[in-house]
Image 1: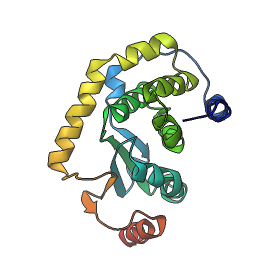
Image 2 (image 1 turned 90 degrees about the vertical axis):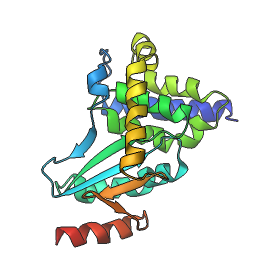
Image 3 (image 1 turned 120 degrees about the vertical axis):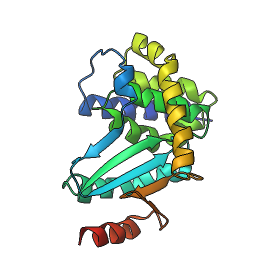
Length: 204
């Protein structure tokens, strides 16, 4: 259970992160935008990576906290890779977290992912993970009415679950995270070093 001091530190971190990186302003939750594919990087890049992940998955958090930032710096930010994130929620809290992240809008989506994964152990270990998610959503810039509309949006939830079912069959997803590189399932280690070897071999 989190202590009051720990809770204060978490809230302070989230507030500082979002206030520094984004102008907080009210926006209408757009269902169409929410269900669009979430990509980062040059869409014309020769290397296309797709990740299937769950926001309550510990291995997914490890990947996003330790590996993804290095991939982003070396390959995504330099136009060599376009990275697509696909939700594959493993439980109801992962599903709600996915909905909230998608409600944030395309421009803030990956920053929401960053915080949700960075603080995963904190919000998933509370007595009420859903309540913790709502706090993150508010600190991320979503207003109370937007959050209410967002978490009650059955269309977004159904869209995520429909895509999860489709991906499970089409891409043979039996664990998270699952990575595809240029339409081929990657079975190597999920370390930066291993992925770098694979990516560089395709670039050369």
